[in-house]
Length: 394
Ligand SMILES: *Cc1c(COP(=O)(O)O)cnc(C)c1O
Image 1 (cartoon, rainbow, N blue to C red):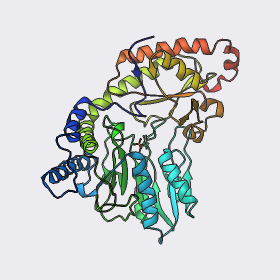
Image 2: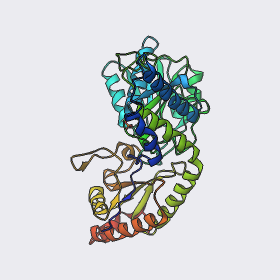
Image 3: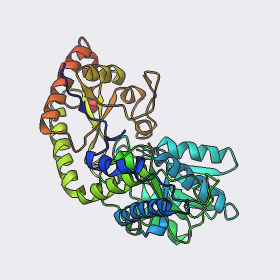
């Protein structure tokens, strides 16, 4: 057992950068003003929040007036979907989405379904991509919103949203994307993507938890979700979490500045990892080539993912199944299921998501640990595995 954790769960959350934390700290104490107060401390807080707003806007090619601070990706997704659905209620009640969205999107949609909206969930192919043609065919006269994620959190697949959103705009349909996994990982420009709304969350790119933003293109209507004070042009009430907002601004600035360098490093780690995995029998990597550089989803046939994760954890390696985990048991991934994996394959799949503090040594140590654990967990299963090895090389 090693004393240092090899953290390979960056798609779940990342540590806050020390630099980012340092920028946040004064706003808990010396500069604690409420941005809604009519005095110098209040004005200072407004200036601070607006500086962060400028950084978020800059990072995604938006203007500051189009950025609304929220409590994170979940709130941004909930707000975008319910807020647009309600604002365009008279125009139609149909929404187009995909089967592999994050629960923050899927559960907001199912709540709308119970209120009389209709949702089409586009299927994905074996590699986890929605089809542009299918998406276009599913657009209707009463479609008011298309919401499709930029990149998936379980397998990293980057979706063809540019093409889909352009077709949506030709039909006057509003477009939203959950870009929570994409920010800091791939270049994001809201205009180039054709996104009318975009969700992001600081803790996925080395910022603090509990803060995010919703980009809302000028001219797009939305109904507020959280009501009360007049913050955020009366669309999102609540006293500003100034330290967290400062952290978001600092983190997104750093993430976009180091994006290329970081992505190249992650791709190198991922390539080494996949090369090593190929030597392990009955092991398959899920997903396609147009994917996030840091995310690898792997099926280890004949092994339960919960057992593998537990054994890895004991050796100081933190990975995840990528899907919801409650009271020790792992729920079958809706993403892998939508990709056509069998129930058994889904239950044997693990997500490894690399981050900027990982090294080549981490990859080697993880591969060694996996080999050792698999030889124990798969003991006596060789014949069984060979019989069903049609999908697995090795
Ligand atoms: C993490 C995540 C969210 C939720 O963001 P929070 O800030 O944790 O609420 C939403 N969508 C995707 C794709 C995510 O990875």
